[in-house]
Image 1 (tube, one colour):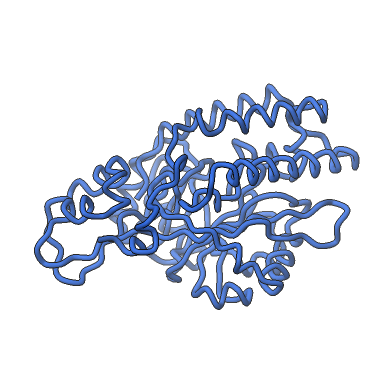
Image 2: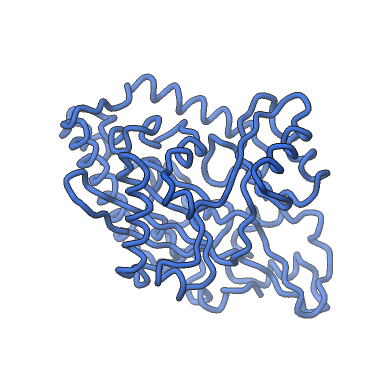
Length: 356
């Protein structure tokens, strides 16, 4: 049985949790078009974070967002460096890691990407060489320190341009499912005995193909994935009750140290729930802009009505904030330029290796 299974046993999957994207997002797209008519532009939200390419809707560089952080915000971001794949990239990567004061293990991920595609855990120089070779040449990558804290969360942050303070509109805990050995059953048996994992074989069995017929010793824990992404198999829980004044103040101070950032999700690793509530002992993995969503909707207890209400609220906010920034003189992304960037991102995602 997987960890966290007991909490989810009564309702392992929501009605819509793994619907095809075109089904779930069609009402969201229609709502976006309605807002576009109201604001006389489909790309107004791209002005919500005007210093980021497309406001972070698509095609943006992850490292360029982190690079904008001031001194205070930088202290809360996990250290990273960047690399472009190509000739002698393993040697160059090792040199960049050393120059940045990092050491193996590290996390390697595409600089332009989404949903955890291509994210790899690299433990040794041999792993690094294999990982870099799996990417096409000329791809920009982020190499980031592996954060040892065990928990991950996504916090959605909103600050209106005319407001001195921002707020956290959503907090999602991201649990990594794992099977626990009993000394008798194979990994495949354990997956099929679990109420949730058994319904999602396409997410776990391919990734674990080399270990499916291994019998885990009694008590041994095997995590089913590395990345905390719902579409890859992580379990998301609504943590809205843990949005405290202390956490809000900390996140607001960090995000106000990133120029003209008003709308997006911050993904963090943290030591404990108590520490996060106190606004302490966490590190930022990445910062996402307008293209991100409030991921608490993927909690299996969320109803379809609640999910759409959250989606409509957040995208409505992105239009309102974008319109305010346009009134200040910022220009939204040209529609056709945005489409070109979206197409490029789709091509890049298709070229990346599977995630860990």
